[in-house]
Image 1: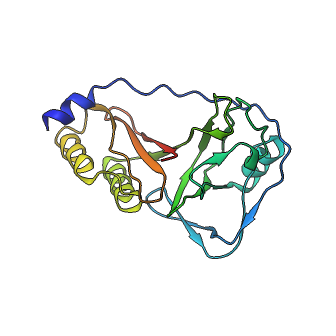
Image 2: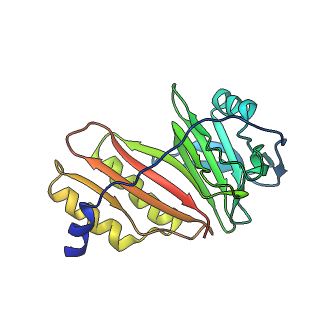
Length: 216
C-alpha cells in the first residue's frame, strides 16, 4: 500500500495527437472477427467473419466517423503506417474523435484482440519510423462502481496486474472523493502491451481511463 500511495501522486503522462491526413494504401482484409456488440465495460465483443481493416488517410478517417467502427491489424506485433494508408516513415499522428456517441475499436494482436467502445482514438506517430509507437483510446465511467468494473475487465481480458488493480480499488473505495493518477501494471496476454492509465477525480461526474496499446 505504501508503494501504491507513492505512485498515486505521479505526474500525468503527456500525450499529443493531431490529424494530418495523407494516404495512399487501400484497406487490407483478413479472416478475423467483424464488429459485434458493445459490452457493459466499454469493451467490444467481436463476431466471427472476415474483416476489412481501417485506413487513417483523410477518406479512411471519414469512413471511421461515418461507420463508428475502426479495426487495425497488429498481428505482427506492430501497426505499420503503410498498412493504414500513410506514408512510410512519416511523422503523422492521426486523431479520430466521435462527437455523437462512440465508435467500436478492434485491434488484432499476435495472441488476442483488444476491443473498446470509445469516442476518441489517436496514434503516436511522432517519429520517422515505419510503425506507430502507440495506439491510445479513452474509456469513461459515470460512477466508481462502473469504473472498477472496467478495470477488472481489463485484468481479465489483457492480463493487467491484478494485485495493483485491487490495491488501487481498495484505496479509492475508502476515500472516493480523492483524486488519483495511476498507471496499472501492463497486461500482455494479447501479445501487445496494454496499459490502463487511471485518471480518477472524485469531484467529477465522469471518470477517465486512458488506454495505451504498445508493441511488446
